[in-house]
Length: 390
Image 1 (tube, rainbow, N blue to C red):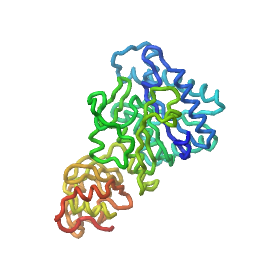
Image 2: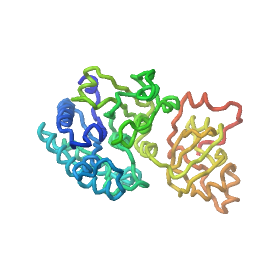
Image 3: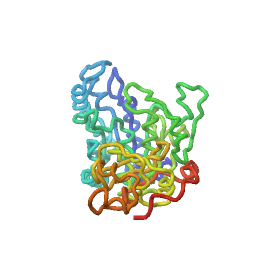
Image 4: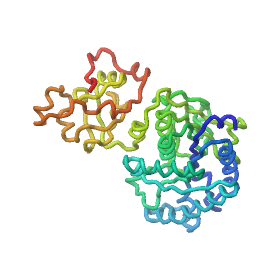
């Protein structure tokens, strides 16, 4: 696999529809072919991590729950049954090739809370050192609608970046990114390479193509933003064929998303990958330009504060037209942020009644998603910046 051989740590995400047939259950022959691919990568010296969907889909088949919609507790029960069967199948197939496996079940909090994030990273890292293949899934037995990833695309991206991976492969029911959903637009053009995920690229995303899938192309692009910003390349390709990883080398279609040329460090990778910011700060054009140049965000550049957050929570920073341009750890509670938004540094103490930090979000705790295109899109002539070094 010459195309994949240059990568040393590869995370492979598998969608439910690839692994589970609604009527017959686990697609064992397909799983066998995929594990053969994984064994080849491992023999070539790569660490391979697997993010495997399918627990609920497999569990509902085993329990005979049919096509009907499931209540939350029924989905959790299906996950409990399916996860055992899924883990067993992975263990058997990997064992056949001489590889060991370990099961990791994550919740949203395991990657969003810093201490739990570091603990999960240490556990997965130890498995890799022991030459075991981590089989990772969201813990659907306890996850709820309000507190969950909801799709394994973004979970896979978080795992890949958490572990310092250099490639994320999303095996899906589509062979890559098109200019429009191909099942809707027959004139949609295939894109073999994406240099950077811009708003125009995001506009190409459609809805989920399979009833078993929670995600769609939009979540895959979300995953791509998480991965590429941390220096991890991403491939989207079809898994609906035998030996889907070897198919990449055979010349089958895939879309490659190039990693950022200036990836963020480990701490900022954790910030950038936060899935649901606790609040949002809308800033003016001057602040956008200053953030692009590496400055901290001062209250003077903030025009609107929304959300309920506490000091240290992750907030999204929005441009005047509503686009997210950065994420960071906010230095103020929401109530105080509202009071000082738009104020100059020397005015803050009089409003809050005590001496406070000059930065709303310090540059050391800030990850900016921008570049030349963002600067071109920013209106000119807005005066000097409201964001400065802090």
